[in-house]
Image 1 (cartoon, rainbow, N blue to C red):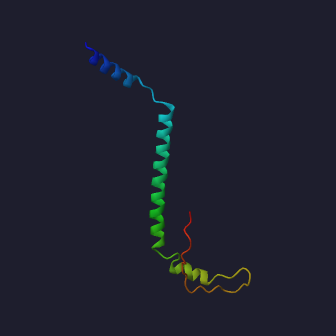
Image 2 (spheres, one colour; image 1 turned 120 degrees about the vertical axis):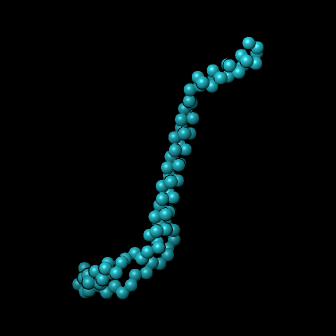
Image 3 (cartoon, rainbow, N blue to C red; image 1 turned 135 degrees about the horizontal axis):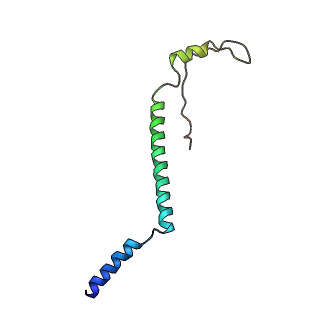
Length: 91
């Protein structure tokens, strides 16, 4: 066995016996956290997009609100329509 073969064999043994370092474990954990947060953010963006495509209240809900008494005046609240006004993004 020449020096080259001994060197390669020693390198293989060193690689096989190398135990994961604390930094490697922490890096792996942090990558997992980032991946989880990224997936959750994408799902939330999709949900927001779906919710923004439909009106906030259906016909039945508007009719129900139109028959509701105001707690302060005891008068019937007349809801004709509902409109969403865009505001600043929520971060």
